[in-house]
Length: 253
Image 1: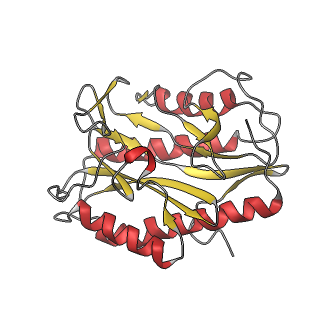
Image 2: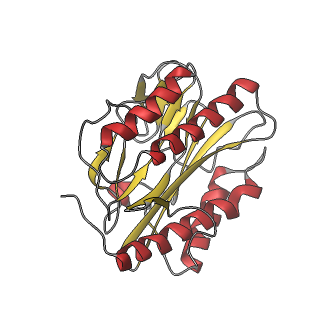
């Protein structure tokens, strides 16, 4: 079922999204060489709780952590282990969710760890641009396919590949709701968008091929060719006058 959210519900989702955006912003200064990823997770959990919210990922389908921390060839769902330190030249995707008063927020960003190669810089840039290309198409009357096509075209035109098996999603009173929002597709295809929908758009773009596999931990998704992957995500509300990004720092209030 696809929900049409009221103005009040969108504000509730926005409050949760703001906590997530602020959490990602807060940990930015700690994303440096030598940082234990488990420390990032602890800081994020403590911060979310300090805002009166609950980490949405921790315990979700058994996931053990507050953050998904996905390094280099990890696409998404990396577990922030106590044994893993960030290293100079890596890129790391950090995905965070929070629930406040029954409504969810979801946001992800890929960071450079120290100085990174030009090819990784471009991958990050194009992935973020792809996200905003998709957001531009999130208007009433367009379709899910319009969003996916915009993302796919920008990524593939620049020589990258789009992960197929993992997609964006509706969000509201559950972390994952209908409809699914693939990062590929055809114009004017799939579910037609309408005002009041809240969705998370999250391109996962690979430096090499689009093929992926699941690691032995049962969670971490890795590129099959071992090349780097980038991930950016915003939660948005689709309004009559266009998309409103809910998960940007300073968006709420």
